[in-house]
Image (cartoon, rainbow, N blue to C red; front, top):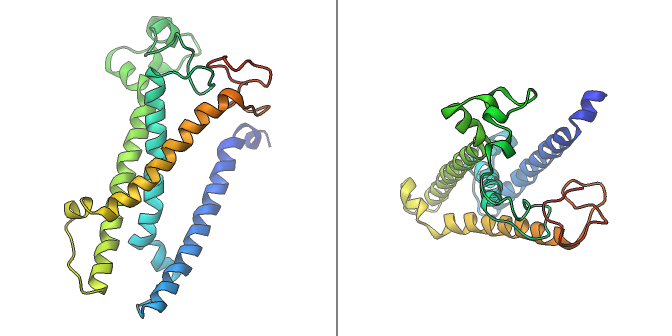
Length: 223
């Protein structure tokens, strides 16, 4: 029970993620087959749909936008601040901060991770590891979206006796960028809204909110 408590946040989101993914697969399969019947096309079994480019594109276009959101947020919060927001660093802490502030190198404590005590490339790599991994996942999921979308596009083109496209040609289509940008704009809006609304609004007990009694001007303060 203690393990469940100590890892409750990650386990909670893992469970609801898997439930939502399964729900998306079930609903997507039903919708795909309904449209196939309407157009006199071949239907697919549930598992055939799950491994199809149609499902892959639907999943990947959301994954890539989510990871882009966090990648940009991690990077932007190094250099940009928002007065009054708990999502921002304090106004006088703009930039990468000193080694002493970051507790790295000779300023590392006995409890610091081993790589925080390293030098050279190992320290640089660990110092930027979160951004590097998030960026890598975003690039990978964006590529997966483009590849599955390209396959789905060509499958539909074959069904309708239309010309298929090479991958690079597909990247230049309005269809690809419409599905991509509709996800990007919603993620940017959500992050920006959170940063601004958290200046004035509170949620008692949440580390994403300032303490209920904190002044609106308090910046970089979390409950």
